[in-house]
Length: 388
Image 1 (cartoon, rainbow, N blue to C red):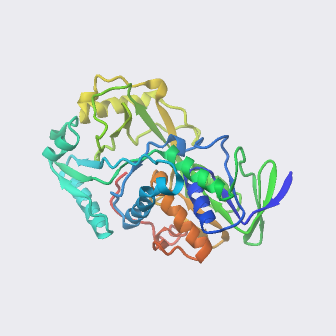
Image 2: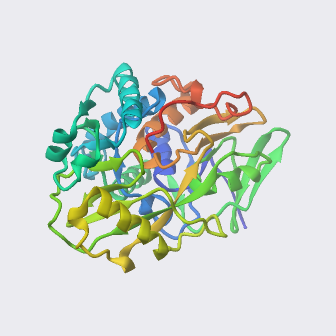
Image 3: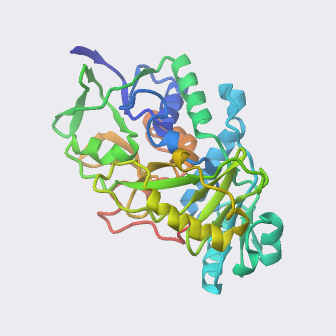
């Protein structure tokens, strides 16, 4: 076993770990080591993400994170030399009842107060115009924001990893962490199957495996893997490429166009005995087909390409928001966990904020105090309209 040292060890080489590594390297942090359990880039949740990007959230902190990420996203090609394929085709949230429309209105007020004023309220005629294949008469209204849209997670990851490597970041694949050595309340070394890395600072960016990593340091982390499935149609020209992400706010059914296919999603996924299982369960397609008939009947005759469907893992926190920073019991274990399906959208922002925390002693681009990891113990969970 080799015995080395690093100024920072980042556990997790997906989009979150890559963004943190890049921003730390950009700030001049020296020896940065990224440990990735997978055999190659995008082997975990990043490679299975559907690539939505939005600032339509129901809490101010998530809106602010999206806006901070959006500023980097728009400059991404110039900085990293890779096109993130950001396509602002919009997000369209639809409501079936006055009650659910009121939830969208409340969220829109939060967005406007946080500085994202794109969101507008729409009626059935607007829904029909924005997403013509949708059965608009099923909805009383909704909200739409034009700068929301799509990105390509793998392109983002490739750009960040390439820039990080050029800055000297060392990335190790097939390197799951087996032990976190502690002395008193601090971690002093990280062990894998082949390496012992002495370090004064560890950052947990392990996604769905975050709680397992934290447990190695004796920390109970309220982050759990939750399976999400994606159905994909065969190639079809039924929906145009500029169809917005269309979300039935009442049922959770939503869809997006990717290339010449359509991704169909619903958050109700059958539970698995193994919480880390990503085997696609085709029985779930009955729920998808019902959503198609109800929301976008124009796709009823378009077959689903079952062999190409897939499943991935969200890293869910109790209030569906990020845990950011350190817990008192392990001050040199920094957390960037629990994004709850929003990690790809917010990674660029979280990377910048984590670099500020490490280099400047606090995250100053945003007030991140509401995301403190001990908020659940303090009965300070974040509350707000839940928009997926």
